[in-house]
Each structure stands twice: as structure tokens, then as C-alpha cells.
Image (cartoon, rainbow, N blue to C red; front, side, top):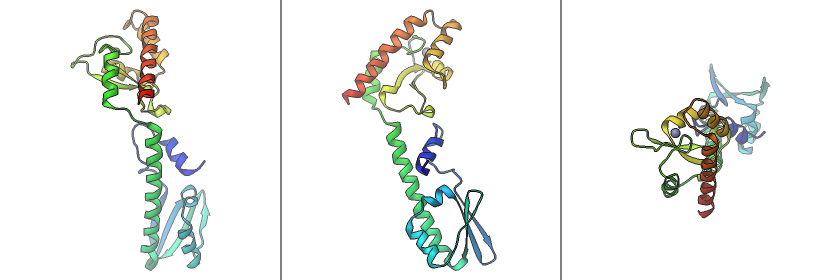
Length: 206
Ligand SMILES: [Zn+2]
């Protein structure tokens, strides 16, 4: 798997940027400077960087999936700036792929959806108020690869949204019936399906 894909598959709702992933390490020893790169990251490196290593006769040592380079301190700056450049490139590549993957929806679409749902929660059917709050619920959670397009969004009261968490919709609706929160999962499911159909039509409109 290439590194951009791997980073994207590691991402979930909680962070949008691959900023915390350990791909490199720096160490000092006397007047030598040690750079360590995870092999996936090193493979992503530019030819410019690799050429520079070659020119200075610096050879990488591969150990346990990490490449290690010992660089004289006086060359440190030029190498670090190349690493920075590469790191920025990787981040922006991941970011644009991520944004494309998650998609977007507009406020206008949410207003239309809210009206279609008659200002009632998609799951329990109770009217949402200022008190209960209204949440945009990702039908397939972003963490499971769901998108942020309107076709993956329904409006839910905060109680249902929090309760649903990562559960699959039909499982969640069954549980609502079991717990006596809704009377008929059949009615709710039918309504839910019509909401989903509506969000699909909203998406194809835009
Ligand atoms: Zn609800």
C-alpha cells in the first residue's frame, strides 16, 4: 500500500491531518547527526534527496523497517529543509485526498432536509427542539469510510446521535424498539428510507 493510502486508512473522525504519525526521528551524536525514516516514508522521498545522499556518500542502514542515515552536522540544514519539503508535500497530498473523500454539503441542503423531516429526529421520530438539539448524523460513520456528502446525512436529536455512535442503522433502530423508545421499527425504517431517498435527490441536485 502506498503511504498516502496508508495514512488515509489510519485516519478517522478525530483528526484530519497526518500530523501525529511517527515517520521520522532525529538524533544527535557528537558532531554527527542521525536521521531515521520509516521505510514507507523514505520510499516516498524525492530523487533530489536521494541524489544528495549519494553525492555525500551517505549510505542508509535498514533496520527493522527504518532507514537510518548518519549525516555530518554541517550538512544538517540542507537535509532538514529537504525533509521539511517532503513532509509538507505528503501532508498536502493527504489533506486534498481526505477532503475529496469525505465530501461536503451545504447549509441550504440541511435546511431542505430539516423541512423534509418535518423537524423530527430520523431515528426516534420525536420533534427536535432547542432543548434536545439537532445533530447532523453520518449514517455510515466517517470512521467507517462514510462520506460527508448530504446523501450520508440525516438529522437526529442529540440523544439518538450520541446513542447511535458507530452502530449500523437497522441494528440501532431495532435497539430503539427493544428499549421502548419507539413503538414500531417498521414505521421508523420506512420513514428513514424515505429520508435517505430524499438526501440522494438533494445530492444529485447540486
Ligand atoms: Zn431521536
